[in-house]
Length: 506
Ligand code: XMP
Image 1 (cartoon, protein in one colour):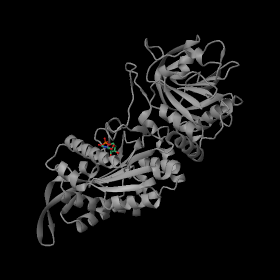
Image 2 (cartoon, protein in one colour):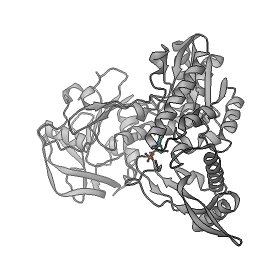
Image 3 (cartoon, protein in one colour):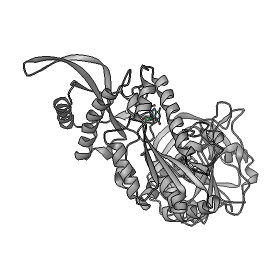
Image 4 (cartoon, protein in one colour):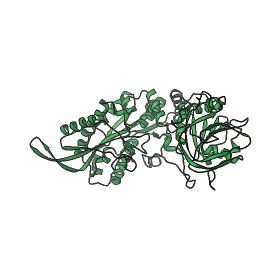
């Protein structure tokens, strides 16, 4: 495997995803947790950083612990760190170099640049420049504006790149990473969905033996894939619980439950609608609604898990981005995010936790789901918040409002699918506003509800832009909603990006 040492760059996860796309396994470590170089580690990549190597407390590592032991590739900050620590010079660039550049000159026979075209476009993003390299380093690439775009240490598989091969604007960046990982480090491209399934099923069999495992299904990709993987490993010893909180999309509970049953999963559907509605009665504050929903979910789940005799494990669909220790460079503190969507349940019920997807990125989870036969309706489902429609009904939740919003949402989502727009947006839904407006239908004046449509494009939900849906499509959906959903006489479109807005309204 390849180790990526994270110095806090926004691109670190992208490096990891590119390497995984080459079917090579890699792991991200914070720079101050450099693992000991064991035979299974075939190479180390040093990431970029928002810091400057000239800062007094710039993130630093013991490079001697890795140099000459395995091939090393420094990217941006990583390259500057290599150059500076071995006697070179790094200075602030006269102008901040950001954006496209071309490799005007490079050593085409250097293994790092095999199959790279002349003038290859690369992506720069740095405030410092390497002005002088140490005497035993050689420059292997230049651009119009910088003399050292890449270097290699003489007679050593240690390289530095001033540009970012991991971003797609570096048009042949993936080839450069492939050259490093496959040719220079000698990794085999064996990390595939099939091999992951095989090895993790074996590992799960060993770890879980004859124990019983409980898992909460949500209808989303992660919990579904976790369930299929565990099912393949331990069969009927996996007990799945799928709770209907009354806040799902129209017919979603039934249809997803059937899909799960068709897949052979041992799944119990629990209708807890009334409990959720009771807990939500009278609540208008978004956080209070979230808390109430979380609490009832735990109550229901605990009750169901308690009925499984001798259950020993709780399985969760946690994925890699949730567990990567993030490096904070404004004071090198480390925070570990963790999904605890069932609260303190493991401690309370004395359950051990198993997280079969915790080394996978979302796209890898999808590939594995596909390989395991997860139907498209689950595989390509948009993200949907845990509190469901409760945070899309502004103000108090009632069963009637849920019903109304479900109808509106269904028209919108079905419409997106029919128009083949569904897969082009990251997430979409409708919001029921707490206002009424005047309208006219036939000869009658109406005073009815307003719904907002929200559709966004995004890659990770952290930032988002409103999707530019065709006017014709919007016109048709708006008509359909007003004509078919009693109680709605006005449809508006949310055209805010995140930030400063958020994807959800509450
Ligand atoms: P925001 O509204 O913060 O949403 O831009 C970002 C993503 O997170 C989802 N979301 C939630 N998911 N529980 C969840 O499980 C929540 O309370 C919650 N709030 C927002 C949202 O749907 C979007 O995908």
